[in-house]
Length: 113
Image 1 (tube, helix red, strand yellow):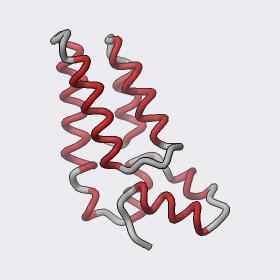
Image 2: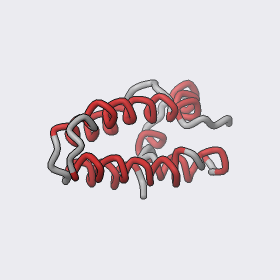
Image 3: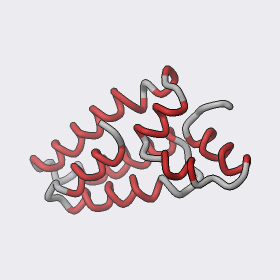
């Protein structure tokens, strides 16, 4: 599962927290925070929402857990192209105008050139 698919699944879940999760995932693409920052933010939002303990909250937590296990925790063994694809940043990379722009994406995805 890639980040865009996860965002879509979050948005299809009926929960007040789901829309905040979707917004956080999409917003992350254009900010300067890292994958670790993203994980921390998403887990904070899920934790805040878990007070409700509804079926949809459990669904959101399960979706995130799966993505974290498959993608976030495995990022160290990925190529840059895999990282760009799985985090939905291919178009961002293609739009980079300068080496500094590319370096920002490398840093965001815990990669080195």
